[in-house]
Length: 94
Length: 140
Image (cartoon, rainbow over all chains, first blue to last red; front, side, top):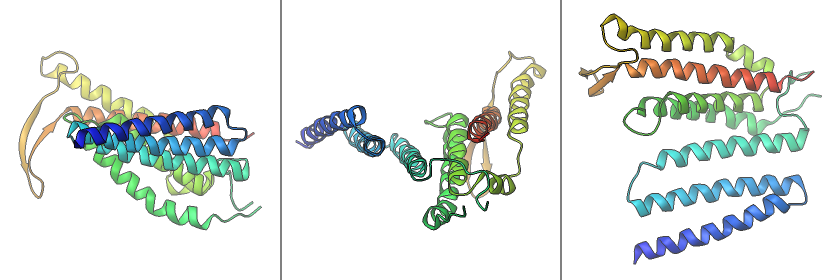
């Protein structure tokens, strides 16, 4: 019973992943694509969580943390690029 | 133009150390479970990139005064010396040994010479990644 629920959740997550992929490819503006990439990261994290529940293991919890960190840094750098047009400043006070 | 990203700067000051701790955790978890020098180095480079995002290249070079090319060279030297150390004991190149020790506070642990090799890999990955990112990030 519980496994069935988990498989249904996995299917729903996969369908929403397809929707985000459509937005990533089609997306008319750059911010659309950035938001789609960020949401794909969140979907990946939740898919790994459900998968580790299906497999009854805690070995993938590190992967979840790592993906969370990478997705945070990626989103922060994309939004800084969109806001300022530059990712790394040479000297902030000039 | 003087800009102030108060939220990003305050957050990155805390998150930097959280990411660094996670990188150390990943580094020591290698060999028996997923992890090791390569992932640890990449996560450390990610933490430094977060500082580069929140502040600027000049401030970060004052905070972390390393020449990353030297870091790469020292890492390669550690890796090669650890791998070549097996020749002294008349066993094939890259052979590693381990033994069980009783350390204070930690308890029963197994210490591997492969961890020293992994330290070299860690330094090489941090050095190469940061060199690439700084070269790309430099304008003009």
